[in-house]
Image 1 (cartoon, rainbow over the protein chains, first blue to last red):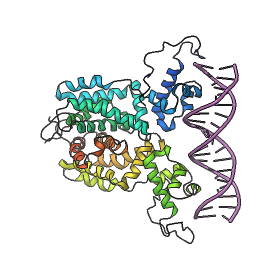
Image 2 (cartoon, rainbow over the protein chains, first blue to last red):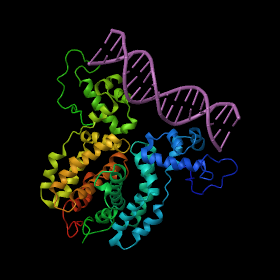
Image 3 (cartoon, rainbow over the protein chains, first blue to last red):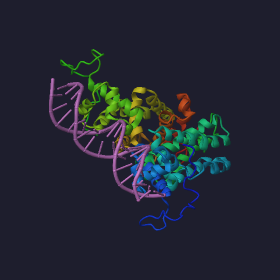
Image 4 (cartoon, protein in one colour):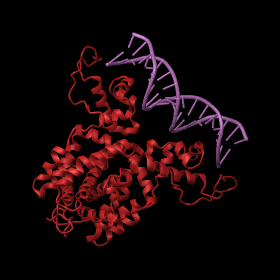
Length: 219
Length: 219
DNA sequence: GTCTATATCGTGATAGAC
DNA sequence: GTCTATCACGATATAGAC
């Protein structure tokens, strides 16, 4: 789960003499294509309904080659869900700004990540898989706690910062699932800006101190 | 999906002459045991990872009997996830009370439903399955829209009542998933009352008019 | 009504030819 | 590096004995 560290990133200095493939004279190499295909498959179908064969098919590659590169299905999954964005880089910046706007900046960032298909795919893969596959659940828990909650909580000036950050996160997770996974109307077709506008005050109420006990954002 | 209407409810006037079973002289009949087992299996493992065999095993019944009663795996699922509670009966009552407390009453009702193992099981089954199985997703969408959102929206005095109701629902869904499915800390071990206390104002901000555009609940 | 036996298929994984 | 062939397994579903 943690050993693989090649999300396809450092391009491919491969390309020695042979790998060429039918149709695409100089397309991405097999390993990259497999990872891309796997990301899409896991994102659309979840862990259980994704098979090595279906990944291979989507990548126009022999099934045995997937085994050859990644060893097992879990290996493919782990390599495929490496996230293409790093909350640590942006979260402090979001939380560091003026307190009044922290809810909106947070909501906007979250929505933008989910609206972007590139960053959405691995997230979808994790979320779709996390509910039935323990390895994916572990990835999700780790991502939430260490990549998000701890980073956020460190910047907060409220009691129970981690708990409050998780409540905020739960809201965003719920929106992501209803809008992007289950596609429940009217949320699924709503304008992102409308979502942000309405959700921001709730996030704000968790992340910043309002009045007495913490909840209500003042007007 | 909508045809089955025997969630095991009207007891069993069966029990003619034969059905007896090893061990339990007068326990529930096979059909009831199958449904109970199916509910648990689907709740714990989701649709894909639950098999007719595992259901049969858990019900101490032959696998072919499950087919005999329900025809297919989808048939078992549909019969198993019939909900044991009816929001229509309680939602108007919750929303009918004093406006100031609607957020808390809603949050409390939702949490209590999820804290009760009996009502939690079919919800877990639906949620765990809805992310990868289309039939389950349809059940979830229908439940949300017709059993919850429409009922709630009818009682609301805010603009975009359905949209706002769904945002509130998304928050609760997110909490349910993080707390009961993924079991992400610290939310998973948090005291229900603490959750209700912090979440209520957010729900309130969606369901009741606060100040100007709608969000902020006054203190 | 209950269960044994089986048909048919798709899965993850491996061995080995080229 | 790539692919063919195959293994062992578990799945849904059905036919038919009792």
